[in-house]
Image (cartoon, rainbow, N blue to C red; front, side):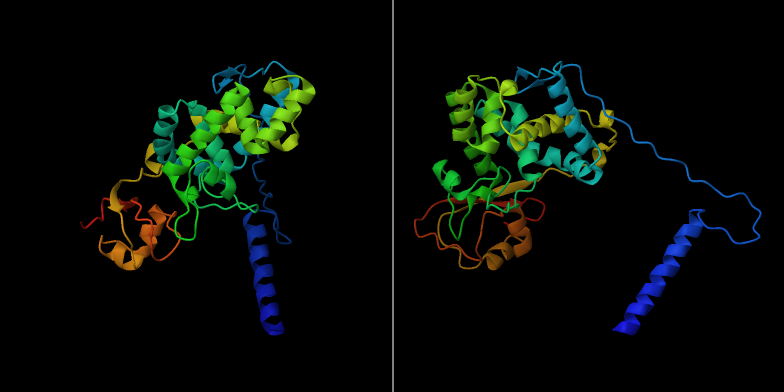
Length: 307
């Protein structure tokens, strides 16, 4: 093992010297050629708009603390290149599913960006606290808002159903606060906390409330994502339409009984078990007992559907 480590270390040193030489940072003795200098890279600030609205409400960017909070999140997300590029490429796929449901339920379209902030547009993500899916539902809240959560089926992973549950939560919160920015804040910090702070500080204006750094940054991150995803080139991202991920084309197959083996089920539609789970991450077991005889709609990609 020691010999192997020395060999690897030697290779690393040789590789490093090669890289330095390539960059013009080393020069042999007696070499009279002028040293090459790399072109310096300059990082710049990002544009903060003079005005903007979020969930139909005017953001008071004329206030220095609001302006600086917005600039902070714009800087973070503009310079987190790999993640933001991924958001730009994935957004059309997930927004095509989310947007009609938000509109149908009277929820401002800007809440699409809350889903980006919550889950990074990963419907299979699980937080350290146990929150699951695109809208990051905890189990108790998911059940409260009508989602099925058990060992066979966990609808927190279901994009359409979890979005409808999120709409129910957002509507309920709006009835309580009468203010969409507070609704977004409550999604992060909890409904009781927001009400307690409104009472304590005697204001219902989100931008006048002290809610703690996490919740305050949360809302500004959502707004920053809105600005960047709506106008990526303004923030240094140039992604051609052809580079964006294609929308999912699926058809729904109704299942009202048991499914003894999802591998066999998938094969019957010309797809693998892996592909089946990719489109239906809410199916949590290799089988479906379905004692209650519920009807489930399973997505099958149309390009491979055999039946």
